[in-house]
Length: 300
Image 1 (tube, rainbow, N blue to C red):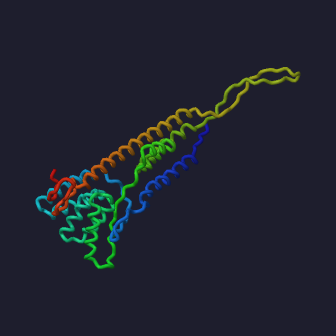
Image 2 (image 1 turned 135 degrees about the vertical axis):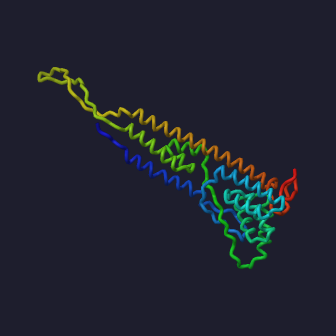
Image 3 (image 1 turned 60 degrees about the horizontal axis):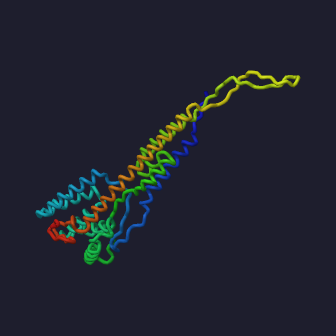
């Protein structure tokens, strides 16, 4: 039995995947930075997405910080907001609260947090006020002072569910690479490659065949002989298994991308509510919302 391994196919498959995945990762990193005040420069650094558990923990800590600011414990509030910012550096409300608190305490870090807030949420309701505050803080600085450089962690861009599904169907495992799960993508590629390899195994089979010959007098006659030919006995099983692996992986990529995008949409809606003044508060400053005013919290 002769074994034929599609080595070029597997090598090409493995070589294409990191290139496409790398293009996906760097697409958001090379995006132009949002317009910021002249004192702010956004230095974008690649960072993995914030997990749901970290985001929930950051929100819980931010809630405790808000409670501490209400009772006037500004030091505790500042420490808790800083902890929340480390857990979820993409939360604009935490940056805003830190900026307001630092400004009230005369801390020079206020401008950095205001710059970070504008980098994360440039169209927020408070954006115009924050730009004004940055301008006021800049008046106390020498004209030639170096601009504030604030790193902004940016999560890799998640593709649309349809794009992840389509890529996973074309190349098994590509959907996992596009949804930033390279380990899963490699496993899917290996599984699909192994199934294809199994299906492409061949063996030489000998069988008896009947042939027709012509005798010296021109009369036809039949005779039995042995003929060898190549078969792929596992082709149906191997190709079917590879297709099943690719389909399941493509569906997984679709579900993952859809869930991630839905969660991001919910967070954006929640952030919009936050930025409208219903949740943003600053220790120990007054917080003016669209329909309420309070000290560190919103009255409805």
